[in-house]
Image 1 (cartoon, helix red, strand yellow):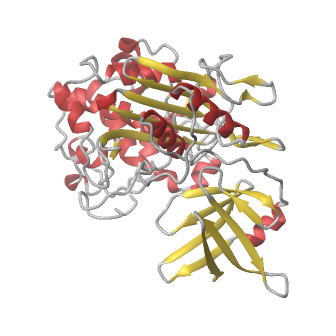
Image 2 (spheres, one colour):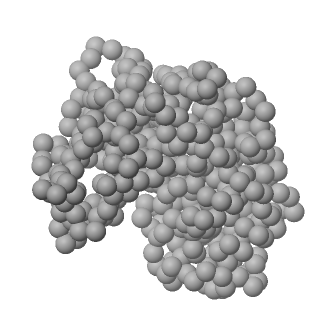
Length: 446
């Protein structure tokens, strides 16, 4: 249920010249990503009415040595939000709700409920605290079932981050409230409504919610990290905890049915869909991020939940659909999707460069953690999460760093390397960031 990441629209640095078809070229690229452990999942790429590529890479279950294939079921985390938003828009079409309704209409005692609208919840502009930021809860209690009232109690009395409607801040809590409101209006559970109104009409027979209890040979095991030396399985968050913000599991085939249905009126009217695809603040609509690439509108969303990552991008003018489902946590799916879109548009793209990853002792990795200053307004934060070294620059997303040498690390989805430098006493005093032929020093300040 992690925050979405926008498509990268900068020009690519390199490209692969090939006489291959787009499908063959994408397949070769995905094989390279899989070889580098940058992708472990299933991809579906469609253009116009043709599925160009639908294929699995890597392992569905490493211990059992079973491979991912097109039937593999994945948790999709925040891709769930577009389904929640669709139900809200259906209810609006039925005149059962207005997007300008106040939250207090459905939860009378909710603090500041008179100033928060349904639209604020849809667009992450409510200012409501994001309950998944509570690390203790997510780490120690999220595997246990919770009723919606108890889930809402986790954030109900937290102070607002800002005045509703004035800013954007990604909040899973807003979509939890939308799920609760759906139940209150319909008299049915959120899960039942999604099943009846979307899954069944579209024939999404391989989609559901309770991934923990799913008994199916196609069920993927989710991993924090996958490499030849280490594969740590992730605990499954209970579907009642991820709820309307991130509880769906599905396959690429079922998600493609969802994509195709959005070109029809099976789910909602054209006017509702256009509103969903209209940016409110920070390029976010109703359950979708809206941007552009190569002069064409792109609607997309990223999803993340322990052990899984997902991404869907749609370019309506070309009926392009790119779906990436990974049973490994990864922040890099938007970049892979960007490269795929570049191939489809016959544009330059970054072909993954082969590098050899080595294992470095955790005690050594801990020495590198801290803050490194490039300038007064630009800090590089190095942290250690689940045994993985992470780099996060000011105002940017987290990126995994992989060791090529004990003090030299690289990103798998960008031409970026980091070298840590010791002083004469053997302590880490700085780092050097290598990026696109630039060499940027940063002094350790904390």
